[in-house]
Image (cartoon, rainbow, N blue to C red):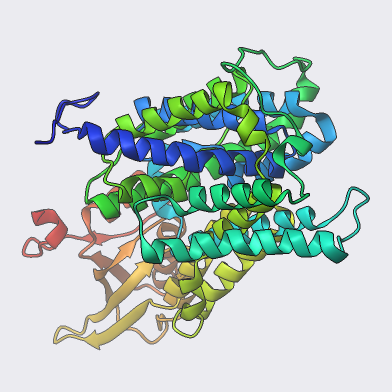
Length: 509
């Protein structure tokens, strides 16, 4: 008989056995990824592990999506790598704290709903670019200390261990899912290297990860305007990328579990976690798609699994660091290459001949910007802006007019499509002012007056007819359109014709 109990949410049942076992599995899988992402960011493995602990614990308790796992991620690591190389880890801590404050502000202002403005081609480009960055960062492991490519036996040994790791991660799930493939691959390669005495680079050769409880530490940076100017762009990118990846992961988990998370609450939790991560010597992070899927696929649905994973991760750091330092770097390299392969949206390649050319262009552009500039937030911002421009351009061509003269000699223009800044030129070309009769009606039953540019266009067309002594009426304006015109009454002069027999569907709703 399974025991259930409510934890943090009185409407949610908790299966203790499933939650604890899933949390242990996630904790094991978090270790190699946290270490690998720390190396990508150019900081010590302990910095990545502390971030994984703090991010996972805080978001599991406070987050808006039970069952979702957060930690040190590649998306954040690739943003911080240049800052770490130029100014050191203390500036990383300060940047993460500032990014957390920005995320808390975004959640408080309820900006999580802006995620709906990011179209799928931009999301595909973002994910694909991130996968390329993670893959390219692993190529450094195939270089020596002098920066030259490895050769001979050293290269063959490293390549063989990397391929073995990838083969296990790929093949084991096809046989059984009872144990995590990534953890099994790490243990197999670790055992092989130990038993055969293979001479290869280990985590301990890179840096020590022995540590205790994350120490509270205020970043040792000058509290000046110059420091703020330096870290703010990085903090803004970290905050934006973290929210995008976290809310994207939240939506994916929502679809799998057929439940609904709370985006704004998750944004506040992510921000709080990043603030504490920076104060407790962590590199910061966000939600992890891979680990979240592992957790959910193991049956976890409550907050307990994430709490168990975070606590056990810290236990490993405090009492099992000696073993972790003996972990071969080849195993981590193979793991991260498989992470990049799994992150890449291969299905997006099949859409090249099926998607509109503008969407394909967006996806490729965002991918290139992400991969080349390593600026994920800029890539997404450019993608969203271009998507909006493409949408406006397409809708600008959709405005149509059906014209006829009724039995009273009044000419009617029945408009179809939105009237906004992009469609004004096409709108003006529809009218034959000089040859039209004395009275003209523009019918907006199938159209909408969207913005100030549209209102000004109505004013101009009214003036054109007025100059030749003709009268124009606007009919069937929706309530929101009439409201716009009423607000602009001081600067325009149009004649709105009311139709007492006309009802909009939206009015009934």
